[in-house]
Length: 273
Image (tube, rainbow, N blue to C red; front, side, top):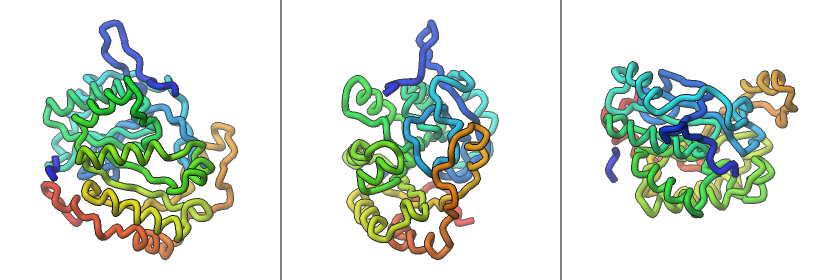
């Protein structure tokens, strides 16, 4: 492989240039895709994951309004740090809720030789038109997608997030059919997602899409977002649940066979440091 419904919350100004609603920007991201990356956190998410640590990104149609050209002008100031792996990552919230803006941003980024990465939970995915055509266009400009598998069981996924997961696995089927590079991520939450039976099922599922999986990551649940719930006056759904032990993290990595997925080490200038 070559390495390199509020249906749509982006709006357009008079000249049809899509506007993105931006929650925040990290200029030196090191955990959201390969290399050092300019990470754009977009506003808006329909899921209500019990372990979400950014409830301030949920609302759609709010945030700093920016165009792709404005983002790229700012991002290119940091290009010297990216090397041969880094680039731009869009995250959220849920970036796919602003798909028109993403298409404009990624298309212009690729024209400038900037590597693109999409961080998504996949929840907005549908094969219905016109959204599906837009998604296919976006994929043409996307080098890597970071995809969350939050729960393998549809019923438990809905209990955990408020939504089922069939369309998320349909999106991964599309990515397999079209040879799209992905990193799979799983948030390990005691009493919610840290169950051996379901971890084994996720591990077995990942094997079915192994040709496109460059990396598998276990992300330990943390409580750093609790203060945001307090500030927003929202009850914290995981009150009293502590982060997983290192032993349980290692167990999850074993059951998800994380060491089997090392294609990311073939990326240009990969370093183990």
